[in-house]
Image (cartoon, rainbow, N blue to C red):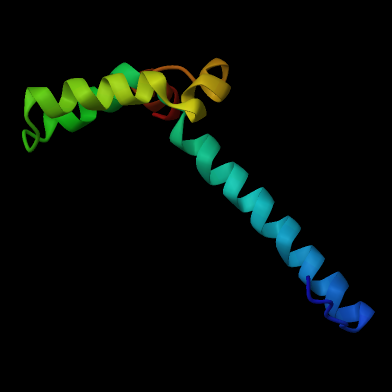
Amino acid sequence: MITVTIPKTTYERLKRHAEAYRRFATNVFEAVVRDPIGEITDDFRKTALYTEEFLHDLDAGLCKSSLMKRHAHRTTQARSQRASRRS
């Protein structure tokens, strides 16, 4: 292992940046799972750009993903319901 010496102020700045990045990344990945898996695949289906085989694989992959398993309890209401509340 190589030891690197930096000023304390630089270390503190890097530490703040790392924490800010961690908070940002957490929010970004939480935003991904705000919609139920069915809604996500329906959005892909509506574009008519993807085959049913791909959509099936997407659905299966999302169901198996560790991110969805960890945050499945955080999915919010259907977007249509959220949109109607905003109107």
